[in-house]
Image 1 (cartoon, helix red, strand yellow):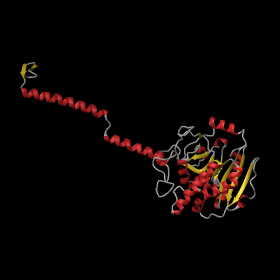
Image 2 (tube, helix red, strand yellow):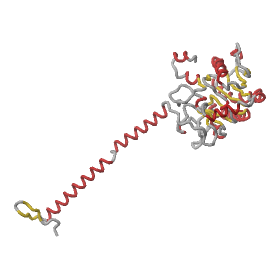
Image 3 (cartoon, helix red, strand yellow):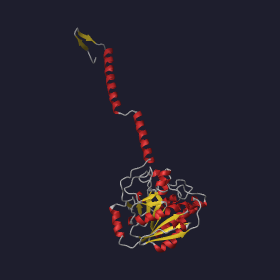
Image 4 (cartoon, helix red, strand yellow):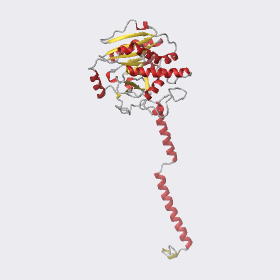
Length: 350
């Protein structure tokens, strides 16, 4: 039976053949298909646009990794429950108030050899102003040239300076092999007999804001300012298996700087002793981790998580990669001087 018997025109009805009906139906369905297809095309991004968006995402990731980062929200605790220290937080204020009631003597150790002698007076003078102000501090300066400290730096009440002579260490490579073992020897005597806490700091740094008792803890590490808030796969762990500093892909929470670390004397001794043994083991095999002693420090701190983690406020330098922090407290002159032109180097007395 025909679907459409006839069409009416002014001249009267016109008969429509079966073939014409089929053609009309085909044309009708073709129009519907065309209109629906157009609506779908409008609602979906073209493959070219999708590829373009993926390209922009990769570019954003590249920019995130290679340029200055903004510090993420200030967490006050690590995933394992250790305090993450920001100097102006209420937790830090409470800890300073609590420890102010106790008599605590803290050691600050710095190695001063070769050309690093030019930094020592600036380091000590800034520490006198900002490092554990109004507390008892002993500075331990390990040096191959004790005359570097002539004339002596004037110290405040409760502050002492102990100069420890070490044999000359020509060349940076020899220094990296021996720094941890020198710390072990110094802790054995005289540090263990004189102080309760000890911190190790690179001498080419300057304290520029208060670093108070909020930093005191059993085992204290400081977050690397260029890697704070970055993805774990950007951390420069020792990935080569030939080194005992090797870190597996599923290990590690943070990347710590070697510019400042410390804690109770017994804990720092165990850290330095373990790291010195790892370095000696690699040295015997003709190996040195790519991050030098910082690699061994991070290896140890993965196995022995710090009980207190200092934010990048406590280790900072001018860098396109460094995250913004509320306060810069300890600035590495050595790390930032290498990226400056001569005029700027002269201005900050590199």
